[in-house]
Image (cartoon, rainbow over all chains, first blue to last red; front, side, top):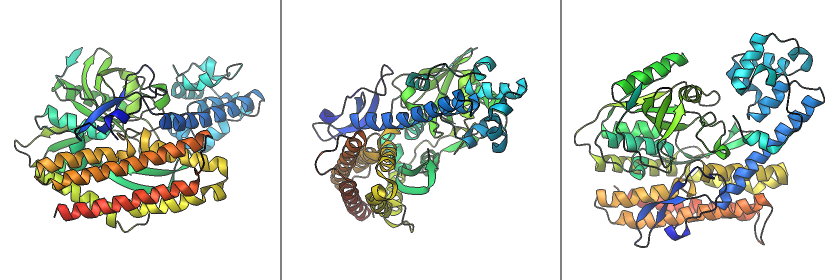
Length: 143
Length: 335
């Protein structure tokens, strides 16, 4: 890749600055060249986020239909699978799986809820509900 | 509480090689990122379908986390200290103690919890490295090599990131340089790194690793669409391109960084042939980029005539052939 070919396709980095990549200058010497991003990378990054958005949207719908507890929604929003969430809250997977059932979730004591709220960086009140409508922005932006 | 260590922050393409080079420079050893990458045997390839990231197979273009730092310091005779922790508070106290001694401290962290990361990059990815270089009250000053400037991060966020969970959890890992030799033999280290990289890529006795791994992946990729269906095949492809380009590789799955290393090594070892091999390696990187462009087009549904999984597999095989020739030539040049 020549320095003149270093792509400048903004997409992922936004106003966070630029990244560097290795490119060859006119004399054939390697230099570090700043790049704003690359279309190919933007596409596959968007693809990854699209999957996360879809999974979160599904969890949101199931919570609203009363089939899962809000834990399922926040779990998906934080890109966690069952094993990862269990590690973060320090409980066995089967317990977390149980807590994803609404009838179990509604009887959970505050100290258990607090453990989930801390991991998701939200309040207990927020943990008890999910946003009324789901938008893709909810997944991308976090506190 | 205020503490600033005079640390020259240099932005780099990849976190671990950048951290290694910056730490060495702080202790008086001049070493570029590319040189650290080469000495540390950063270049690698493995396709590991039994390891899953987001339910998709893992492809890696670099060695295991921590190995660049470990190999560079061993080969240069630098003494390092490493620690891991059970208690989070102990990890933060140890960090403060290190700073109080005036030492820049390298940390392994997860990317998901670092608030200064652009949102698009926030995945559960536990192989990030950074250097803590100061503290102002509850904010730490961090030389994160993939960022342009020194960044700030709140103590709580840093603590979270250092204790990210999941695959390859850092468990608060931190490391610093204890003592450095006055005249490290860079040339011998570069030679060692170069030879080891070539041998790994050419003759690891596993079909999933090195140039054999690239060919194995080509064979798998060719059949993805029949085996998995179009949609899943494209997800597999997208993940592969992300691993190649996104995770701080400096472009072309580290191939350009390695070519930059070869160019530097040509001078260091007084072997002008290495400069010519570097050009060949640049060409290999360009083929990898071609692969990414074509694959991304398919992911986006903007296929052009001739874009197909079979075509991508052919491109991969070209990469494998070219790389194999490069490594063989290198082994001949660096006897």
